[in-house]
Length: 151
Image (tube, rainbow, N blue to C red; front, side):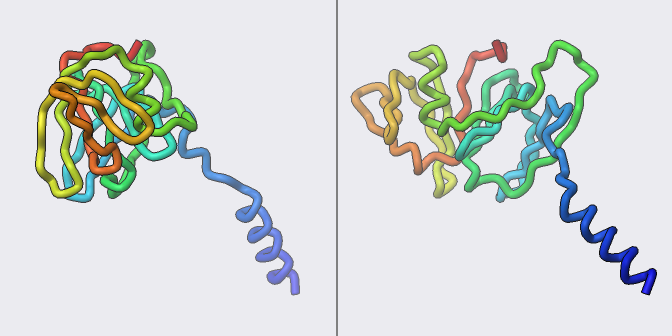
């Protein structure tokens, strides 16, 4: 009988405990569904995307959640690196906060890639040079070229 009580108490503790995956995190390793691995510094987790400063190229890099297979949290010893920020913002909303125009490269759902100058964005489309409208939902990865700051 004492063993049943012990297991009931243990089960109750596990049910009440929540894993704090986002505490003290300033780097996210993104594994994409096509098995790429990218470390994002000063990461942002939005409503439908993950973004951060690409450790290798020093560009802002955004991934649609539909393109992410797995995230791994890390902590870098760099004290100047901002901790993970959670925001209730969509990818289009995030892009609206960035200085434009900006040169971007994108990867589409079908794995095709393109580069263009991004002039504006609304809730549905990225607005590029020559009045091109690129559906935001068709993009799984977006890199803003020439950015070297997370400020």
